[in-house]
Image (tube, rainbow, N blue to C red; front, side):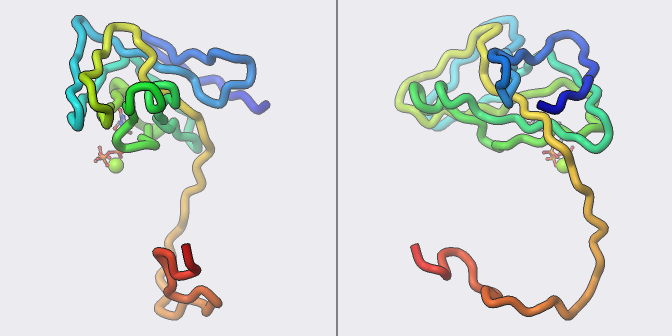
Length: 142
Ligand SMILES: O=c1ccn([C@H]2C[C@H](O)[C@@H](COP(=O)(O)OP(=O)(O)OP(=O)(O)O)O2)c(=O)[nH]1
Ligand SMILES: [Mg+2]
């Protein structure tokens, strides 16, 4: 497994198994946050990273919260740019039927570090032809 060093300040994401792809991130809050059904909340984590150029961090949901409570990350996968130096925050949405309570240090999401390929977008009015052409949104059948 490839590894890279990433500097952090305040809190750290934590891998919970040897080969976990995602490092869990915890809520870092003074008091509980209640998320009502169909509402969302921006949860601080106290995590600040210096991600090396050429990488990003993706904020992904935890499947346990989704399966048990219907709670997920609204903008999944959230994108943490390598030049971002602010606190990582998680936008949770409660798609379940009950209030969801977030307490300090609850593991609310996970971070996956991934390489980034930057495109040099080149304007060309004639794009090459393909069999699919302009077909999308179920054009090949469901
Ligand atoms: O779940 C997320 C997503 C983003 N961010 C931070 C890090 C990221 O680098 C920055 C900007 O995110 P994004 O590009 O997704 O948001 P935007 O709405 O395009 O804002 P901006 O104009 O600042 O790029 O916000 C988070 O803390 N959590
Ligand atoms: Mg942006």
